Amino acid sequence: MKEMPARRSDEDCVQREDPQQPPPLCGSARIIIASTRAADGTYEDRTGPLLETWLRGRGLDPVDKQVVADGPEVGAAVREAIEVGTDLVITSGGTGISPTDATPEQVAPVIDREMPGVLEAVRRRGGETAPTALLSRGIAGMAGESFVATLPGSRGGVRDGIAVLDPVLDHLLEQRDGSGHEVDAGPTRGPTPFAGDTAQLRIAEDPPMGGDEARVRRAEVCEGEISVAQMVEAVTDRRCGAIVTFDGVVRDHDGGRGVVRLEYTAHPGAAAVMREVAREVAERYPDTLVALAHRHGALEIGDSALTCAVAAPHRKQAFVACDDLVDTVKQRLPIWKHQTFDDGEAEWVGALG
Image (cartoon, rainbow, N blue to C red; front, side, top):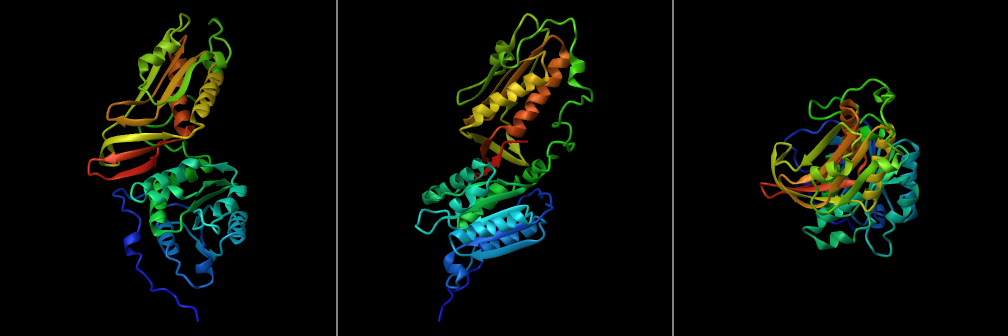
């Protein structure tokens, strides 16, 4: 006769309370517990209830849960959830290095667009207290219209996953639906209104400015200090009568909490994304010269994190293109920040948006 271990309370595992209530989410969720022992009844599912509480608390409905054996059953359950249009598919378990841990291999084939920063942040968060968290091989990404994340099978790993995912889920779903940057977010965000075709910014008498790639004077992700002066120097040109700049600096607060320092972590492909964004903006505004840089590594309050400069023959061309450039970088650049608060606590959050 199989014996169930003593049931333990999950009260100590609920997600952290946010002083600013996060917005409710619209959509469905599927939790898939990858554990052969839990599937055959010899082990208690201790992470599923935690995930259910979190997802239901964010307003998702329905929130379904399956417990399956490690291996192919995990892949089948994930594919089924994707096929029925589940918005969020969260697995727990099977991400380690034991012979039966195969969740990443089962899930990887269905991922269309990987989001490596998500599980990188989970691993680093867990590694601060348990070095073994760095052995987790979890992955995350979009599979069609479904977001899939494979979290560890421990309650601590799931807590870390919730802490990383909770602040970005609403933004993720908005971006998926193509509306993440169309909502009016107040006077500090959003593009400069320009209802016309960008071709209307061109003036026939102006001299030609050259091809798209040649007009990208600088586009990089680097660890050293960056400055607006460097960007201005890169785009200074006798044909241009206007240079508009942006200097994004580290502030001392976030969400009502004091920030003392932060660290940016960039995906290995971030530099290529930065160059692609710069080229696309140069293509949209053919009378501009573009330079921008984003810093990664440890930064202090007041340090420049994102700097850019756009030069053009006339001011309107430069203003509109610079605003578009900053917004596009924040939408697309795969970079994350680890904030340390004045009360000693820290968290990983997405730097986008």
